[in-house]
Length: 200
Length: 357
Ligand SMILES: Nc1ncnc2c1ncn2[C@@H]1O[C@H](COP(=O)(O)OP(=O)(O)OP(=O)(O)O)[C@@H](O)[C@H]1O
Ligand SMILES: [Mg+2]
Ligand SMILES: [Zn+2]
Image (spheres, rainbow over the protein chains, first blue to last red):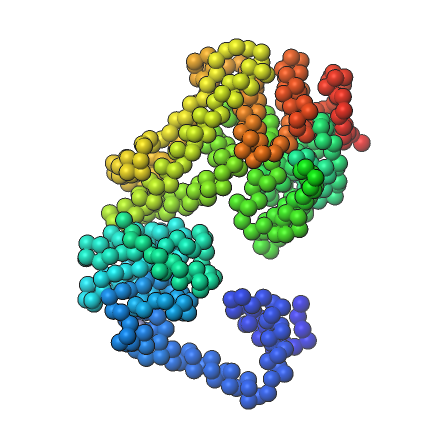
């Protein structure tokens, strides 16, 4: 239902496009913005613009970064021999929250999914192979989501990386089947990170 | 368990109707086209997610309407559970299931809770029909009693679709297809074992029921016809890999559980060759009753039996035998044009729901 203001309706429509925001929450947020002081609204806008202008993709791991190479990749206390492979940038934040993982990351930006027309070369898989060849990586932990396509990506990685002398591990199946890493609680992930097992 | 009350809205010829049933025999009577089978269909959708007539959800919505809604009150021991199914075909297509007013997100958590077994004219397809119909049938029954199987079947289909997409593209890299071969072999090995066991378990029940229905002593048997065989996943993987060239040529997966079948023999010969119509009918009833036996034993509750049309098709002896097999055990919903040609003893303690105006 349209409100008496076109401007308000336009904002509600925009907010509604955000994930997890239904039309009710969008209307609530829009009314709240309307009541906020000009200064606060400007600050919010500037924060959003600064985010878009400054956040980069780390040229090594493919995660988010404010610098060409991210703070995790350049952190000397991180173990450079262990690489955790994840589906998307968000999953990195979820795993970091557990505080148990001390290695480095590689973001694939997807999984192998023929049904969606996605092969190994359509995600950051070639970069993964390159890193395994040129860096001091000894162990790769596949932390893709426990879906059929996630499993296929694990098997494929095993086929390509094992001949390079790399141990390929997968997260222990502490994750409920069908669960998305982003929605799984921190305790479950840190448990499965500790119980990872070698893919045969 | 038994269905106490059924409410349907915008379902087939019904606008908004409620029916009540007793816990033994219920005869739904009325002229052709009065909506007898539609009532059983609504019950089958509520219980099995799908129509026993294999109709699409869209076809079941009352003409000119945009949704259907089914509500059933099911009594089990001292409990009453409310099951709801709704399908909407407006703006977005939506299908929703609820148990006791809470939404069920995954079909696997709904399927097999309200159990029914339906006997209908198309059941002879399960004896002599296409392999696909036979497969779908055994999958639906095993899934009812085994959630893990349900999950594995869904996963198998997904793997198969992915593998076929690669084959169809015509660009088949070795490492790429190998991944899907391995995933396929792993699920196949599980599915084949389960199907084998199920058909083994059902064999004696089937033969026994056939004898009880027909009073014949002829031998009947059911045999699994798997597309790939093998004790281990490695055996199966081997066959899938050996078949890969052929798959490439046909651009689809030509081997695997999605090509399985079973065959039913009557007096040692395949049924499609010699069995009469009446015998096919009795064989299909025997199979459905075997399904009932197995489902009831595994889930430890009584199924509601839905009998569409076939009742009036049976001779007096077989009809009597069928009734005796279920008497005092199950709630049964029959559709019959009239009760005139039923015997008084068949009608004792039963409810008659007449749809004629
Ligand atoms: N989607 C629909 N919308 C409205 N009416 C429908 C719809 N689908 C079927 N019908 C009507 O339902 C009736 C058929 O109902 P049903 O198949 O239950 O009949 P029946 O009583 O079992 O008949 P028979 O004795 O011939 O088997 C027909 O009159 C048909 O027009
Ligand atoms: Mg009918
Ligand atoms: Zn980085």
